[in-house]
Image (cartoon, rainbow, N blue to C red):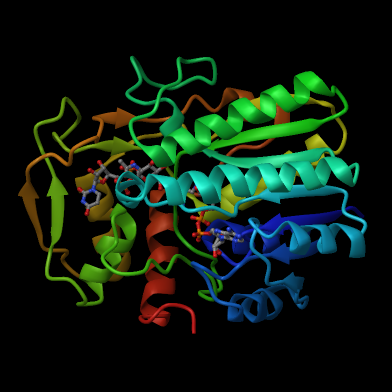
Length: 337
Ligand code: NAD
Ligand code: UD1
């Protein structure tokens, strides 16, 4: 079976993807600088799969470290998760974001090329669609961004399309994730944000555990089912399984393709709050606030390309996502330690 290098493999999506790759029989090597994660995650992966992936504590900005990994291992493909992801922070420290997400990624692509490794799955985001003119969103919709984080995703996509044009032996999948939430059913892996969470699910979970007083609902005057923002939430385990399908495809086909990974269903903030209340058996206090700058009303995916090309579609529903998120949050109130 092929050997897959997973950059950012100790992080939220990366760790769940390692589990699914190992369960599918792949050899997994993890690279992470542990900026936003902990090495103990690898022990949790072992508790679930029986295998602790080989680990390199390396920064993608460190070319020597990257070279060493490719010199010491016969790598068949790379899944590239490593990067910074906080939208608000990217507005305050754009150069740090461009350095990590662009310069770091270019290092990785160059060193892959030097070692003849030309199969890559890249973590892009639905953020590249900006404010879409309509929903569901298809892969050929116009692209635009509103913040440096989003721009790093769009620029990586463009860089990788150019790489393919220069050498048609590359096989590159640009996976555009919608809103990943939930956690491993084991309760051993999940999302552990630092500080005050920006994203909806981690915030609701902290209200449920008593770490926050109430949910701030950013606006209820959108043109949606109940006035609150609608998003395509996808279970992180479904997303991880999508990466296995993507690797399987990429190892067999040359080319460059953008693919949405979502469920195709939209839920409003209040619908998610209600589902979480059912999962945790508690009321989630909330207050309606002004709209959050930069937010859009509605965003959900057309998922037909993933189904046709990868033979993949999401299986879990919003109840599963909330149940699993709560299971993890209640078992790990201080995160993974
Ligand atoms: P995460 O922060 O949990 O994981 C990213 C991992 O990369 C962390 O373990 C971090 O320590 C590591 N990392 C960061 N910079 C690094 C560097 N220079 N060298 C080595 N390791 C480095 O984030 P996540 O939620 O798992 O997201 C993974 C990828 O998916 C990111 O590229 C993110 O932008 C993208 N994405 C995430 C979401 C989401 O909602 N979580 C949505 C769309 C796209
Ligand atoms: C955010 C990022 C996006 C990223 C995505 C997935 C922004 C502007 N965009 O999208 O780039 O790809 O996360 O990680 O940050 N909400 C509340 N109260 C809260 C938090 C959120 O009402 O405390 C609402 C938001 O207004 C939105 C929905 O919940 O309607 C989802 O928000 P969030 O989880 O932050 O994700 P996005 O904004 O969709």
